[in-house]
Image (tube, rainbow, N blue to C red; front, side, top):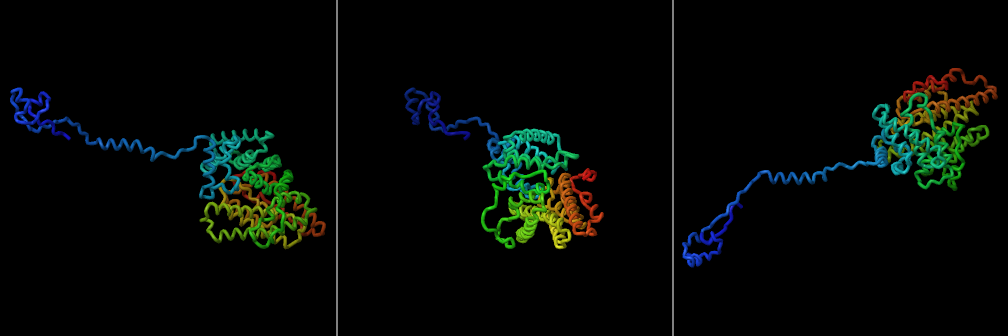
Length: 480
């Protein structure tokens, strides 16, 4: 306050700073015989005050400045390389747009973030993979200097791991090789751009045969690499028989194939898939097995189609959640592989029975099914991953129908996810020429020379009619 009550004694006692009894005159003034004046007068003590109108506002601003960072502090980003890679790959598996979601690679891919930091080779390859994705998805396929530098570092690290007898058996090396195989096409041009590395993956699978990997996802990754049809049509690669013993079928009666009891698909068991290249290498000695496998595949394809149709009837494919879309892609991938296997077996059966009208009709129907399923699957696959159109290749292998060939070409042109490298084209073309040679031999043996394939059919063989995408203009100049 500006003033407060102070002293009420007389003036003489106040000057001497003595206590006044307040009487008139006071006893002290009477004893000293001095005038006693001012007794009872109220006096005020004034203080000089400096008043600032913004003191409270400044104090509040100071308090807000002290506490605001706790409210608006940004989320801390990972600082080390392993955490950064784990965060980036986790985001790739949670993207809502299927064109940028990498869950289609399988369940083993979900375990990638937990691997980073444990193996330098895998970290280098994953870092190059991410930089390559930026070039494919953002820069229109153009890679930066930083991306090319990381690719070179990844190549050097992976090459050293492949020559090491210990690391070549590691699940980290296999995982790094798969990522490198997918991403290397983003960095290279020319003839190397179309090189396939299925032989390298098979080499790693055979090198790790007998190694019991503890993690379930590691085992799943190794098994999933055994299913591509390249091992069926490529005689230069073979899978170690250890996988047949390790992942053999469970003993017990099989479910009826024409009834869906949610049973496993017997045609997709490892014993069936791994025996297929062995039996097809000498098909004349295993015709009974080829026929029985072909009939079972036809029945089980219908089961997979029923499961796929049931999922699409319940939910709109464009409104599916991520986990539902992931399951749909699994079913579509199974259907594509089964169609590829069925069409390959059909091509062999037609080679030994070229006059079978039923086989010709079934091959054409299966080929159209392969075209339709491949086109339906394409929107659910991420862009730029270079998926091999196994079912489309097998459809071209099993039939010479020009309408089917045109549909295959249209599917490849319209989709931006399929990639057919030169090595696969050569393998399927060589197999088709082998099958045609068998058909001619059978027709000649039955004295049906007039039914031999005419020159127009011989000249209608792709890849000359098929645009394989990825701007592979050099493919037409190759002697395949």
